[in-house]
Image (cartoon, rainbow, N blue to C red; front, side, top):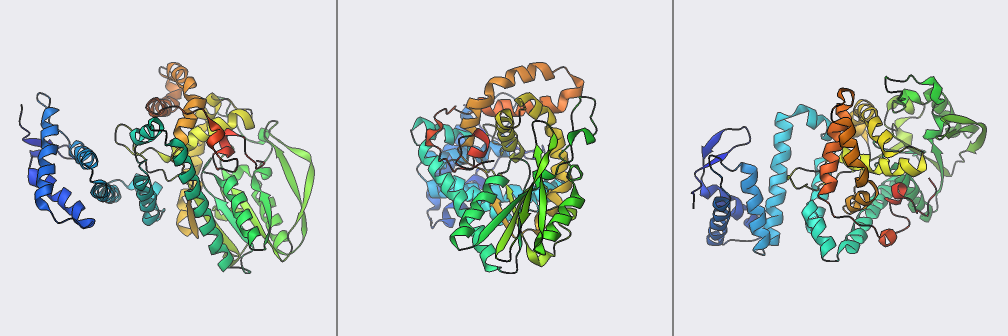
Length: 447
């Protein structure tokens, strides 16, 4: 059997392999959970090296990531779950530190999210044995998927309750609660649930859906594909929004417009709305953090909640699943039945969504009062049942179309992800008030 002599570092350099580094990594993780047996760390390191050597190929060396993957695998298979968890968390922490040092673009997308929040999400995923696609597939095989649905639902609900408690602690000064986040992160359901939590404390809530303030669709320019860009905040009537917010805070009655997404126009009729002194106004909006959206309201009277799918699950290539891909799948499902869009239209429109998020949401995340994790560890098997059948045709249609390369790259990535996930079709195990019902339907809530 060929001996392991070299490894490839993350920068591509080939360096000498040193087994003692594996021993030190295992022992450090073990000490985090009270272990003191370095000899055991050496035995486990020998097993890791043996597995690496069994997989050695001619004229090739394993990468540092491959070595770490084998360490994780050996710790878990040897029954050292707590040590494995400490190692995974340690690995994740260092990965984030490297991103901050070497990738300013990635950091600009995630750096405004408190690191402790992301760490807690990863910690939960490890504790519940769902931190990889393979782990989730295994839970399905073992009949434990319904239990994962239950745990993930409870986790999200607890996060919402924590946000509600913070709001209560700032009453009666707070008059407006803003629920903001990128597309399909769970804003509407979160708004409803915060409303429920505050109602239990004796407060009456009034929700103003800012989606009703879109300009008529014909006012927006079309691109070369005939697609509308209504993801920008300027697609909303900001002047009217601010006028109505100011009037509501002053106790006046407004006439709220009603927007019909199927026709792309405001309805002829409006709905009267007012805000009494004992009521709190909730805003559910993609662009709720965009300052011109609520400039007529003093900061002291606003409580800002940000929700994002902070998914900390690795795919079969050991890469963390992109948050935006989770949200794309949600929107593809929802748009197909709720907004008369087929999945292809949603996929082709997504570049507008991403551009708007980067320009008008990400820069303001650091100014919020509470961050909610809207990811659900069980959702990918559900989306596979709804959507996977469409992706082979997407790949075929986009592959050689130079104008659709953005869509092709995204479709290929999501196709490969869904291909690795086991399908789940029995949606009766999902509570009727679960966040995912906002996308797959069957909710007790009206959207």
